[in-house]
Image: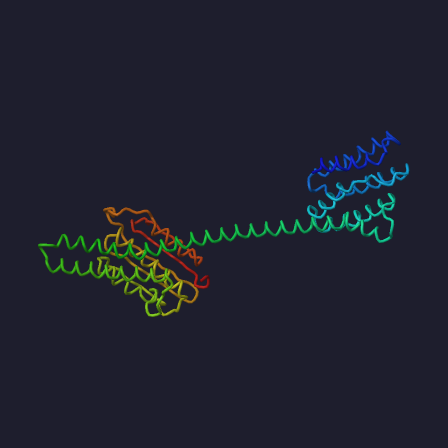
Amino acid sequence: MAILAAIIDAAIFASSGIFGTALLPALTMTMMLVAADLALALRPGTAAVVAYIQVVTRICACLLLGHYGLASGIGDVGVLVAGYRAGAWLPTRASATVLPVLMVGVAVAALINGTADEWWMIPAIGVSNALIPWLVGRYTAAGGAYVTKLEMQRENDRAVMDKALADEREAIARDLHDVISHHVSAIGIHAGAARMAMGSDVEASTRSLEAVESSSRAAMMDLRRQLDLLHGRDAAGDRQPGLANISELVDSVGAAGLDVELDMTGATVELPASLDVTVYRIVQEMLTNALRHGDGSARLNVRVNHSRIVIEESNAIAAETYPGGSLHRGLDGMRRRAELFDGDVECGADASGRWQTSVAIPIGAS
């Protein structure tokens, strides 16, 4: 575009007949016009300087032509493009400063060149050769900025949505892990007991099979509850378990073979629903791990007040490794649940060989 502007403006200037009248000044002025137009190709930050150069060059060309009595021969391409660049590429304050200089410059050049026969043509030339290109540049820049803003907003919304979907998938995975692994662990233990008692102790085998049936039914109920939540069908009468159900949970793992010594204080404190189910799931994971990896006994201490919940569980580590293996999903899920409420989780074996798990959650963070 800069090259085309230089060619056109130089050709129009040459058509004035200046080369036949004053060769050296004509060559000098032509080089100035070409240089001013080629400067249009410079980086956007030079738009103000280039516009000023265009004004000065245009006035000089008109003075030269007027000196030799030539009233025509000034092209408008360079100054039009300079006005557009100033409107499109400069900040608002700098762009507004350049505009009056352009308008006055082209009006003065028209007066010198004699193209403004009537007084109203002077502002008309300023508007047509400076204001209109400047307005087109501002409009184009504003439209481009708006489109860019929309694209950035769309990308940000997409990133937020992707993160929300990832968090939701992780939450679903944690819930399914907590719900299913607890009951499946109990089913596996009862099924093994029934197999060993089969043929020698019919009554014990029957009790174990009844426990398998009960655990399977409980697993299906919990799974259906999770699916109802995913489908937005959270019935009021089928609420999520919480702090008040921990005693039932202890009885359930007791039936599966884990002797739990429970110490619970503050169970009457009313917790927010999301925190209430989180406390239950954390305790459920603690007892499931003790059932899998412990020696059959555990101590559970739950202390609740109006500002803090502290859950502590300890159990001796079994001599034999749990055959199902471990990917630490339970511990990771426990940490993520506590972190949602600014809670802390500490776990590990102590010097005596007992596994200790401690979770502290501030109630105010919920």
